[in-house]
Image (cartoon, rainbow over all chains, first blue to last red):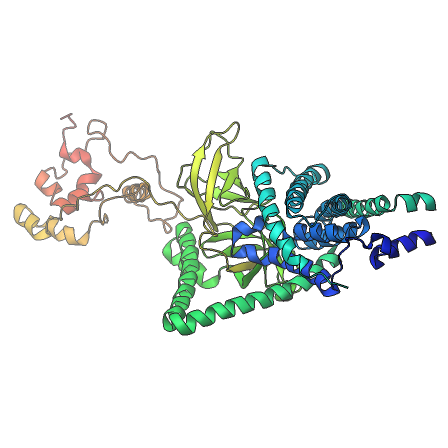
Length: 181
Length: 408
């Protein structure tokens, strides 16, 4: 078990093996950005209802998972942001948590195979994970809670495209918060 | 085992995270409870920030508007709006009371009772989730708010409290797909269940196709759900059509028409009656009734006797004007029966009068009058007031007009 613990520590201390392409952020950014994304979703749609379709917590999960390039960190990021989002919704805790855990895991896994600094790749990944998020949330709602949710495919695709379009400039802005050695 | 965990470390972490959350979900679904601690943490962390942002935003906006644009107009507008809201609530209450009782009784009830107790709350944010129709208000258990309380505006119902925390509460709006409430239509009193659809209109479900609901009909809360007091306005039916087994009724909610910033949380609800619907048919013009001839003129005409003129003022017509409603006609009929039977309602002993008496017998069916009865028409019909009055001698003894008992 000691090796297992060491591997876990390696994820967070960024061992030289994983250091290539791994971005570092200030702790304030790691806590503040997800909190700001959740606050945005809580507050802004009051005045601009159309912005309720903007899934900033999801985009932040995808971004940090892609940049950290570690599935474990992706899982923890996704679960944390998802559970925080669940806490502020009227759904049972775990719905957004499970979906974002999977998103974080897969995003981090993909980051090990693609150049995630490329804007085109980010656009495609943003679209894919947004669609995956909506679809898997619908599946969970039906399967686990028995809710008769409707999946409007056209709307879901449109929402995914819009989120992907927002993801590219947003990721570009977040890149500026990287800590350089 | 250790080798397995090292080799599949990422997958193991993923599975642990997923399984932990599945167990959390299962616990909540199974016990129908909630993990309150985590929610309290999250709400306590986010709502102060949202409150600060909202205070900053509204403060800035108010400053710009109040001091640079419309200082006095805005203040006056706010005061008038507050007055209008209060008057709307008073009007709603009075309409309900007046429709169920007469004016004196409703005034007495109004003096004794007060409308539902409410507390004002400010909407400070939305909950998370795509398309969520849940808002956060700045009143929580510290202000006496409890889960399940109704949330209204003077225009209509808004939603219900689904969770109450020390500093804030979640309000599920009536447009949310998981919202349901009992409603009743104003005109035909058709019961149904109000359901949200996720957008601005709501539907009334479980109304049989055979039941009558018209477009434009108002819906009110029925009180069946034990959340909303009966008689609160819900909205107007915009589309009504027949469905497979139930009618498809689309309603535009009246409580959300003017935005949602201030709401009222009903802490103690008072059921009210559904106000009467206004008649939809076009008004019919009724000519004024002809003026009654003065007693003096009839006295001049009936020169053969002076008894009738003297009698006329002593027996004024108890029929004040044209009978407009069924209730008026019924009251008039009972009054005539009472007079015919010499029965004073509420005072005469011996129970009720004979309500089956024929007030308008045909002359042939009527018993012949006494032989020596005054039969002169001029005597029996001193003038219009007496002729109109069923209690007059001419009315009491129709046979007097035909003393021989012959058919005309």
